[in-house]
Amino acid sequence: MGALVPPAAALVPTLLSSARTMRRGPIQPKVRASIERVGILQRVEGFLERLFEAPAGRLGASLQPVSLAKRIERAMDTNKSFGDAGAIVPNQYVLHLNPSDFSNFESYRAALEDDLAHGVLTRARRERYTLVARPRVRLNADRTVPRGDIRVAARVVDDAGERRHREPATAVTSDTVVLSTHEDAAPDSARRAYLLVATQGQDAVQFDLGGPMITIGRASDNDVIVDDPMVSRHHCQLKLQHGAYGFVDLGSRNGSMVNGQTVQEVALGPGDVIQVGSTTIEFGIHG
Image 1: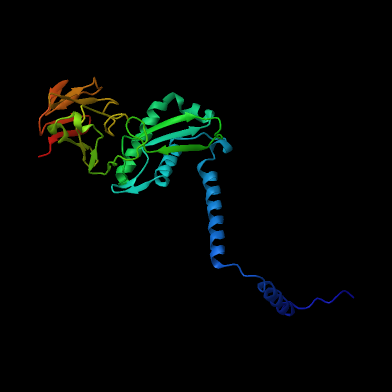
Image 2 (image 1 turned 45 degrees about the vertical axis):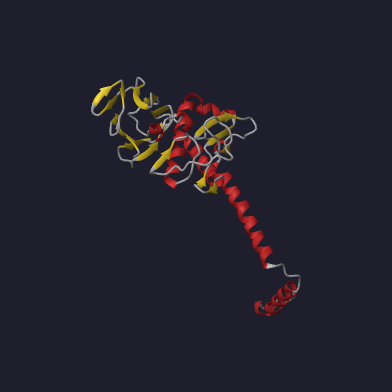
């Protein structure tokens, strides 16, 4: 006859006894166990990010602009610091891509970089982050980056591209944007000038002026960036002459109006209203 197999109930004391024997070993501190669990979670999170956010090259698909925008948003959040002005985020983003991915964007790279930079500004206003200067985004071909991956180098720089250390940051909110200027080169009236910009369907934004030349348009290298498809990339500018601002249309596609009249160039006074596309811009002087 074969060996008798004891009933399952008879095995319970043996299993419990084995469990007790195992528990007699050294007990690790709970803190260490918690740290180990966190480490595991971080590794799992990193794996999932690589799997779902940068799989293009591995799955045979190509990177899309939305993937670039998401990586920039993550870089904004992970590189922010805090100061008197609130949360300060980088304003320069260099996206390193594999040359094969870079080539997919090369035909419209300039427009894409402008759109991504405008996305940085829009998100900074929405999240009430602080930018020290106009945001800039640049795509760069890098053979060390695997196909489908995106590596972002983010930093805080001034308008000249130099790192900012000691100068105070300028808060960018949905209410006011202060443009970086050299105040000693402008008279007091110019430093008190401002623009109230309202694009159809969006909240008005106030831009404090002070520089000798203020450019307006859709492109990210303008001082005042307007999210309006009827506005040209470099639509118009305000020029400081003899202590007062004048308006100049830069040969825009749809033209410009001041106080309801189509103009090419005109002097501005407090209360004048500029119309470009679906956007109204009121010029004013702080009292």
